[in-house]
Amino acid sequence: MLRTERRPASSSRRPRLPSRARLEEGRLGWLLILPVVAVIAVLVIYPLALGFGLSLRSVHYASGTPETFVGLKNYVDVLGDAESRSALVHTMGYVVVAVVLEIVFGTLMALVLDQAFRGRGVLFAILILPWAMPGIVSGLLWTRILNPDNGLLNSLLFQLHLIDHYQVWFSSPLASIVLIAIVHVWGVLPLIALIILSGLQSVPDELHAAAAVDGAGPIAQFRFVTLPLIRPAVAVALTIGTVAALGIFDEIYVLNGTALGTRSIQTQIYLTTFDQLDFGRGTALAFLLAFVTILFSIAYLRGFRRQTV
Amino acid sequence: MHASRVQQVVRAIGVAAIGVWSLGPVLIGLITSLSTEADVQAVPAHWVPDAPTIGSYQTLLGGDIVQGGIRTPSEVTAFVSAMGNTAIVTVEAVVACVVVSVLAGYAFSRLRFLGRKVAFVALIVTLEVPIFALLAPLFQLMAGVHLIDTQLGLVLVYVSSQAPLAVWLLYNYCRELPPEPEEAALIDGCGRFAVFWRIVLPQMRSGIAAVSAIVMLSVWGQFLVPLLFAPTIATKPVTVLLTEFVGKYTTNQPLIVAAGMLALLPPAVVAVALNRQIRGMLSGWSN
Image 1 (cartoon, rainbow over the protein chains, first blue to last red):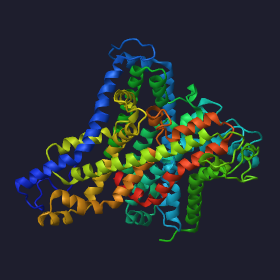
Image 2 (cartoon, helix red, strand yellow):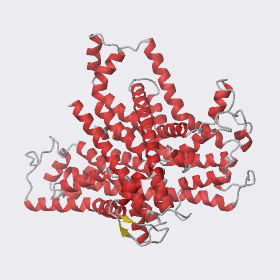
Image 3 (tube, rainbow over the protein chains, first blue to last red):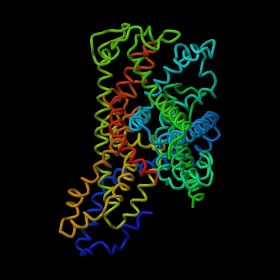
Image 4 (tube, each protein chain N blue to C red):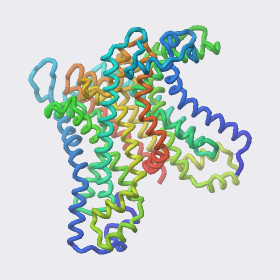
């Protein structure tokens, strides 16, 4: 909805303007939005059209063969390609691990932050740090922690006598994907926690008091009072978490490069387009991923709205 | 309602866990950056370095100390100019993005004009278009007008990718402002633009601060876009240089991590200083 009660279209509260003033308003309106409209038209909408064209053609700069129209062939090729498929499986792994951890721990963090305690302001400032950190830098810091030869996690577990020799954490694709997803979660979690917190803060205290009178313990209160009311915030958090994880690239690049075992779709797009210089197939894969991304955000927001209303 | 003893303990554990989780890796980074190579290689780890040193920072910023014989003058220049590139492009992108977004956010929320709805919906739809879908065509487009490896090219890509969100946030912010002062000024015969400039803009200060911070954090950490659009040291940002350091100085972790800590400093300062405004903006975003 674009309009609110406060400002209905034919406002009776607003002074009726003479037509010259209304003309001025219209002209000023377009003048003010023109820069953004121009930027978006030239740098988003036009490239989107160009990209769609690219994805329907065979554009292979490495071989120098002339461009030809191939219809949906790039899409079919990409869907049948073993590397793209395994990248798809990895990406689903990143998304599932990341989103589950983000929602569970984001909610727990928000429940803590929703309390009143001394030093809350300081905790907020600390909490937000990982989100401010470039993904590349957080990758570097986690390399220091997860390094198999001199990493701090190994050292900690060894010194606590929990392991008797240093472990290679990135020993299997599955373990690597889980660890990279955790590093990714580290950077996204503050945003998720703050969004769920804003949902929690909109729950009136009286509801908890009433539920307590009815004999509901903290867990029952959370399940039957809090959870239904923070659904919209959780939907936004889910969308942001899923979209971020679907496009994961930086953390993988620092922690494991473009290795086949941990490659995400985003990594595969990068390699296909800018390493193999196959712009047609690369763009087709990118469009498929974009399509899935948009589907996810619509599905989450729709699904959660329906359950709340 | 008083928290019970159990609740207090659980809360204290939660607070401690959030603190350790969020700050732990940053502290580890700080300690690593102040260590020698020998300290970092130690097994089991030296949690407190035997010989703390700021040598890595001096190496990066052009001091005279040479560590492990790897410092060459050109590397110093590379790091300093990459930091400079990041800083300049980020400032330019933030200013450009916020200026155009403030104008549009105000216009969409307060002015009525033909095509307003269509333009607004189109803009919000582009919010859903992920940047990776545009990389190949944008690259061709930019190469066609010779904007690869230029500040202008990077700034344009960043503004186009950040503006939809910035407009959306500022549009919501504007809508929450009380309309009465503007209406009074209009009745007094103020022009529309004067009303915007003198009455609305000052009221938007904390919203503008929050959106600037959000755009700044996002642009500062960009990696894939500059990896493609900023191939040489003329425009290469510090994030891309860092990944090159990783390949080059595999054994000198203190140096690499020190570079990372310096790259973290500006966004960390912005995030901490403006965290109240950022939180306020986020709670509006999700409702």
